Image 1 (cartoon, rainbow, N blue to C red):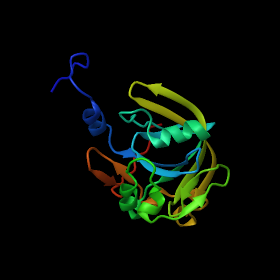
Image 2 (cartoon, rainbow, N blue to C red):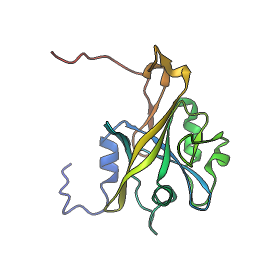
Image 3 (tube, one colour):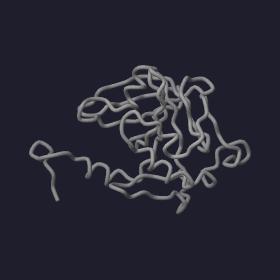
Image 4 (cartoon, rainbow, N blue to C red):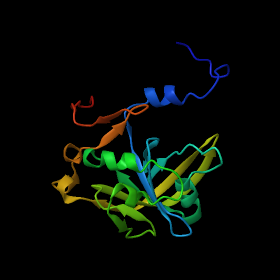
Length: 193
């Protein structure tokens, strides 16, 4: 298969999301300007910088404009990233819903208030990053939301010798369509000198 983007009809979503795998899932929690809490998963998510500590997620716009999550971030300038682990994957899937629904209640999750931000986070999540809006960039039919991490919650159960232990985290990644993957099949590879 060869794709000339200028001549291609339709979106390259399936090709991009199917080739760039596995992707971490940013389970983003926000609060609207009117006080409605929101929780939604985004697989276009990653770390951007360690100093300052910045993460990003990139939601695709709805047909009628911004989805709830990016609109809430624009309005309040804060959000939390909840890391999705194997024990939370079903609940995460329940939160991929429409407008004006409290996804915490829908998925039966514990809602906790942020320490530094006025937004909730998932109490069951093993790692949570509280973020302040760093930059918001419109890119075609998507947005790039950059958030500076201001506070981190890490469950002691996933810590070894004072550091986050990825072997204990049991994070889940996104593939394409309805496919996900565990991060349990690991190998080590030393960098060359």
